[in-house]
Structures are given as structure tokens and as C-alpha cells.
Image (cartoon, rainbow, N blue to C red; front, side):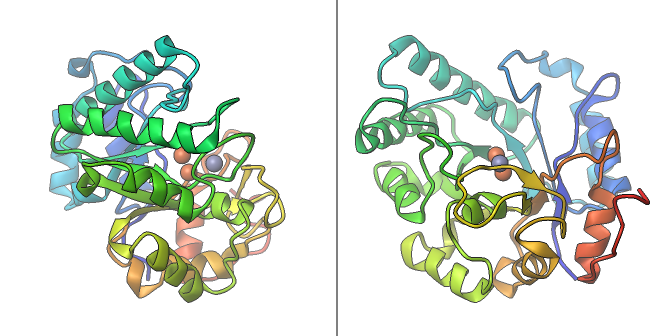
Length: 291
Ligand code: FE
Ligand code: FE
Ligand code: ZN
């Protein structure tokens, strides 16, 4: 049994958050993650249109703990862009805005990609991230920012626990900074998932397990160390169901929300099936064909 297991869930017209909540429950989820608008841009509908009270009422009725629900920030925020003041200003505003929106849903966890250093020295870029995080955290109370561990594609920051630690330690408001461990990303960055104990021990050594506030549970299309970031369905990639199961069912991750971001199979969301397989720890041959 794996507690607090769910997936990315869409939020779409006409039911918006009410639909998100209903969908998550229908897929057998007791944790989930969503974007408050399109992940690729920062255009956002007014909160009043999103049926937030209706969604929250359903979650309450079904006993789903809002502490296990995550919001994911839009992708194009890059606080590390030192070359362009406008872009940095835009990114910082977008982050603060998303923190406020997270609160408006009654939630407190916002997952965030640390950004990319582009043509700038990595250390300076990471310092820029820390100071921007400080500004956002001091302006908006009550929300945690979870820095996601990245695959290391291009100049992505946060592709090692050490780099994430540097960005956190550079913050003076680090009591509200956590980490989201994405299994595809850390595998692509070179970490082994063969031994869940060893991986968590290493995380604890560098970052402290208290910072581990979310897991993204994804298989990977590529071999370990490929630095690619292409997610694969559970059991269909280089990591495999057994390793993902052993990590997700690890007692140290009991209270941590574990969220699938695996690809759709054609038009079909795979999550209900993937969650069922993970809960049992048993891979079913040919499951994608029979969706
Ligand atoms: Fe992410
Ligand atoms: Fe992720
Ligand atoms: Zn990814």
C-alpha cells in the first residue's frame, strides 16, 4: 500500500477545480497536482471562475487532505536569467502571483523548476535564484516553494542535491523552501534508483529529509545519466516498476505526496491504471494496450 499517491490532474472548463477534484478521486488518488492555467504560459483566469469552493467541498466530503495537494508553477519562470532584468522581473512577479493563487485554493505547496543559468556562471545564477526566492517568500506568507530536482538538460540548475542545497542555503527564508524529488529527473541526472535506502540516505546527507516534501514518480525513456528529461509510463522505461514501487512504498516517504507525471497513451490518461499497479506493486504486461 502506498499512501498519498496521485498524479497530475487537468483543470479545464467548464468545471475547473471541481472537475479536477472529481477526476483525481475517480482515478483512486489521495494526493494530486495541477497547474492553475496552461503550464507553458502565465495567462491565468480570474480565480472566481475556477469553482474553488465547489472543488474544496468535494475534497472535504471525501476526506482528501489538502496538505497532499500540489500546485505546479508555469515552466517559463526563470529567476536565474541574469542578463535580462525584464525577464527576471517578469519571472519574480509570476512566481509571487502563483504563490497567491496557491493560497487562494487553500493550498500551501508550490512546485517550482529552479531555472537555467543560460550563458551566465552557474554559481551566480544560483545566487540570483536564492535572492529572488527570498523576495517572493518575504512578500507572500503561508506558501512553501518546493525546488524540483532537475535532469540537467542544457543549463538547468538543480541537477544535483548539492546544487539544490546551495540555492536553499542562499535563502534567508529557507524555512519555507522544500524539495520535490522527480525520479525521472534524478535518474537522468545520474542517480541510481537501485537502492531506495541509499538514495534517501544521500538526500538526507546533503539536504536533510525534512526538506523532502514531494516526489514526482515517473519512469524514464532514457538510460541513467542521459540528462534528457523524457518521462515514460510506469514500468515501461529504464527505471521500471520495481524500483519505483520500492521508493514509493519506503516508510520514510509515507507522508510525502507521490505524483505521477507520465505521458498520456494516445488520448487516454494512464493514471488510474498506473496507480492501481503501483499500489499492488505488480506490473501487468500489455497494460497500455488494454487502457
Ligand atoms: Fe516539474
Ligand atoms: Fe516533475
Ligand atoms: Zn520532467
